[in-house]
Image 1 (cartoon, each protein chain N blue to C red):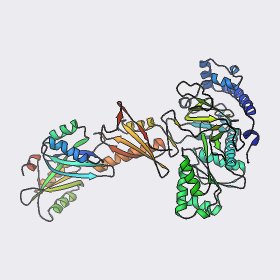
Image 2 (cartoon, rainbow over the protein chains, first blue to last red; image 1 turned 45 degrees about the horizontal axis):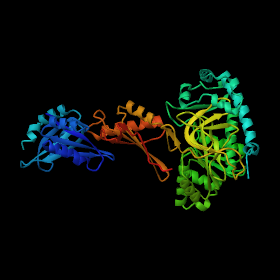
Image 3 (cartoon, one colour; image 1 turned 90 degrees about the vertical axis):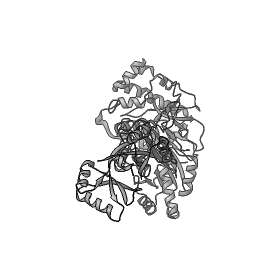
Image 4 (cartoon, helix red, strand yellow; image 1 turned 60 degrees about the vertical axis):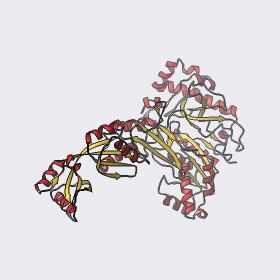
Length: 143
Length: 431
């Protein structure tokens, strides 16, 4: 099942990223993964958090521009070639990946990859058919 | 001293006044008869053509604003049948506030004569090679100086703008002696010529630069780089185009072609006419225009008029370089930009009307930045979507304004406001 990712607009100003993460830290939001896409004049901070609803409320109150987007969190073995196999599977099934980022967990030999594809539900079904575990938000914070 | 038409350029103030008076009386009765828009304006003010008996009576006539031009667009101010017109020119790509001006053959002759006077005042003769790299087309810069150069009998190079390599090649190969373009392009050409070490191969002696504001410092830099004397020229499409006034060898202000254009300075708030030497808004009456005559047209340019003996021998009144605007119009790279146009585009594209325009001048070229506040609707988690929307906005702004701004997306509520009102324009140019 897809999980909710929070994407935040980050103006290209010194200290802006610090400000946003401070807002989240003060609200006791736990971050599991993040990535930043940067262009010449702005950035997009993408976050996987323990409580997307609370995060959205806090960002809204702080006047930040953000969006909540469903993404796929896929559990893979932390071994060479395992990411490539999942990407091949998605690509052979006709899915194009907009972006992806990964993180390893404290559990041995386990990593997660966050995928953004056009049709999350369909992609999740295809992955599960092939025995790939697609995580729920709770799974990610129970590591 | 050289003059193109010494009988006018050096006429006594009394003679000039008499010419202006005759033309004004004739003009007023002509527009009252032929232009319903004027007739209604005059009727509303309770003034009839017979009330205009002297030049001073002009104060009885109503002012005309850019808004009137908009309301009367396109034919509402035509004073001659369209079949008598041979040309139109238009202001730089400003939809919504576009001005379309009509010319009869005689109007073109007068305009070109005015430009010929400017070229002669810059030392031009029929033996010169006049290199015109103002834009051609609807913009009056190219056609005006091109026509002036023809009138004078000089060899005219209708280069139009852009393609710097070709400009320099023609300059060196054909020995251009007088350069006509915007001052920022002249500075750019100068820098390129210096960089390429071609100064010795350039035969320029003078330049006639207008359509945008420039400083004395910029003048000295251009003069040094190109080894020329740089002259200012002023005009506006509404009144005819470049050549409404021009600089002479003294370089202390621009002589207004008073036999064709009557100038007044008014207080922009009270609309009272101010005495000579006061700073106020410049108002023009085009005395000889047949197709598109404007009476007491408010230019919105803030400036000063002085009539003092000039070492060049011309008696024509001089106007200072415009010092600013009495409206919010910006001139960026020679193009007229109104903040309200930017607002319209933002709203059409789905952005909030919260924006800030930052204009600066770097290496003699205007920079034009528009900061726009991001909204949840325009935001996306993918860079591609945000960038596509941003590009659409830049393209729409370019289509509306005629020049491309650099758009910067900023966080909501970050655009500075003073006393609750946003500061829309920050003009950092020091001119």
